[in-house]
Length: 444
Image: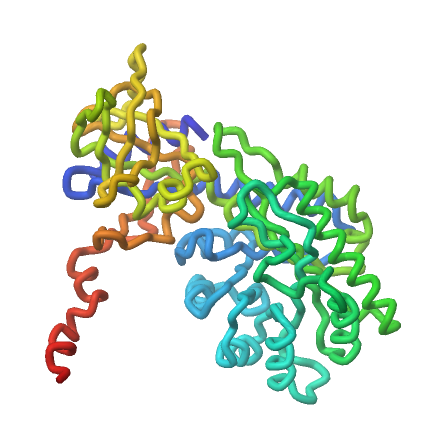
């Protein structure tokens, strides 16, 4: 991983992907993405009964980029979508409806109708949505798409509140431990024979594996109870969500999909005995370690005796890191202007600042690095998920170009493929209402 990364950084400079006119770029390691997808498939193949249908649906919100979705589809993955836009991206990538799952706590009637018309699986979030879905299904014994219900097992939260979806007051799903909720869920399935799936997603970054497996066990036990109550296996698929956390402290990939799958097998053995189809919804863990933001140092200055490197990568890209640095710290590497690692003996604590016009736009504070100078480069590691496609348009800063790379050739050659072109200033002006410039002035 590190060797491929260093090759790619140097090649990006040599091939002009980064420079004074393009001071920030995103790089994705295609070999790393393929390896992650293969590891996910292998981890579950090891624990499921042979022949059990398993759909690994990539959480599109983690990298809403059509070429990325297509690459993952080529590696055997589907898509989990949570909006009309994400659904459109999945379809543009060539992902077929039978390999797409729709999840969202605020689906409109139009979204539900579209999913049913296309044959896309979906999970209702709450009783009102389930009633709305029932009206659309009508008297059809066999809906055109698999339909499920999301439950919140209320097993608790991890170390990052915003990433914990199975707390007592989470906005997602039916709160299973609330008074009367469990009985209502059993009754809801009994009254709706077309409801055949149960969905649970415990959390994401900051959630330990034991908490995740506890939530999946609660969903499995509920499925068993429902099937027993109706006297048949009405629930034939369990959607266990995703949420595998990522190690942002080093290049080591931990925890692994295998560790999670093995823990699931020991905690919920019936999950893998072949009676239930399985759906997963991993996102960050498939992409994070394969991404790198590379940014040019525009100026090097100091304030209060502390060196500050002012770069072109700040809150517009690393939004979570800037606003919640304790929860989302990023490793930073220093490179010279040619893309070679700066390995001077002495390291100097310094701030790595972004271009946004507010004082807190810092991706790293007091970070020991080889002292950076104007024209040098900084690399923000582990940024393949959420950092590339969830742009924060502060100061009308443009979205950077993104390129995938293959750095596996024995001769050291690095090949790049465009994932997304850099956004132009004209595009920023157009999407900011330029065509309607006189609209307000004409109102009286």
